Image 1 (cartoon, helix red, strand yellow):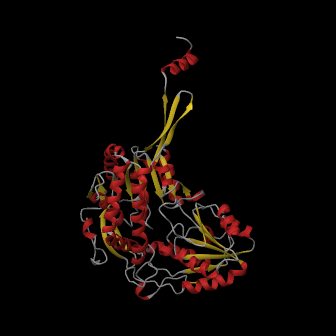
Image 2 (cartoon, helix red, strand yellow):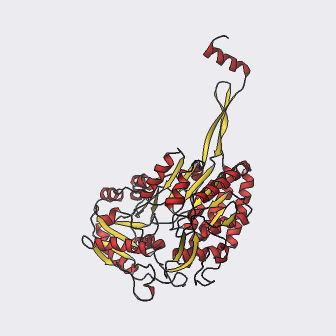
Image 3 (cartoon, helix red, strand yellow):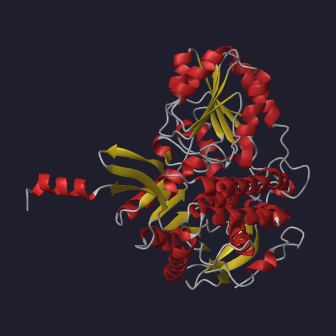
Length: 511
């Protein structure tokens, strides 16, 4: 089924590429066989722009079979051959960059300037990085560690990887899942979020255009309950990689345990934004607004809890609220738009409910409502600043995933670092100070997978991304991601027949 709605070709130039279905299995698009349909909705208007047949368990089986059939050939390709294919892939992505940017903006509600300048270039850069990294998958050099024996370590691909990606960065998350897996010689089946299938499908088709063999990358679009859980529990899937909420991550881990498969989890976050009293106040205010509102706050590393040392607290609250009030909500495809809608009305209403409940115990300084007028059909919510909440309150402890920043004061450095660590999460954080010793202490003592100093949110392909504690385990991006997608084998040679005979005699006697 293909229903493009009334969306214009300018907003969705790649729509005809999905006419054959939303499952990409063995190098071609097919229809799902569940008998159920799912709609892609433009969250800025509420309009359905594409309808597809959802994947069934049988479709997942077919995708896993295609990946399994492709594994021997792809895993035996030389690192140089895989590298060349990924370099071609990066070139194809660059040629199709505008189609990717518009499809991502359409399905997510992201401003087009964000997808053009961040999501798509970041994905191309990530592809180019793994094209080079594919040539550097080294084991350990040989050595004589035990008498007349030589040992070395082989690094080998795991097999078929089953990955599940979220809706907040569907293109980049597809890349973060797929690229290290296939660069290491694995094959993959990816299930995107039901709301945002479009750019993952474009990504897989671009890989085929670049000459990556059929079956190496497969995409199934269906529900988490049917397609996702079947993929995680599939006996022919050797590894599961999941990005999403901590609650769903626990369910994924439970299912994966039954087949004792490798598991990589990147889960929720509640990033602290720690401002010491010697910080550059203007820089911190701008960093807080950008860090809190990136992707309408739907980012697991977004600045959500600002702790500001008391001498700067009131000024920080006042200036941050004033800057938030200048942020322009609007059509994601309009050049002047700073902030788009949330992913859905359901998510918008969830965020609004958190803020409404907080009015009983905190101060909503600005925002706290959906806009009226021409934007009211979309899932928009105004940038919101909440002050003076208690540390143990819901709005401080729970992940909202919306354009909401909570600000709390602290007195001593010890207290600030303690409060920064006082949630179950540990994905990202930032510390703002002109004092290198203060900043360095914060980077040591804050329990998070990434700590920025005098900045918040930038990521680069060469460095790892992943969390501590309830934010999961394992790394995306960088050479460290290969630890997730490879397994280590010890190989040991006996260099002399005599030593083997002597060793046997030691164990069994002279026989």
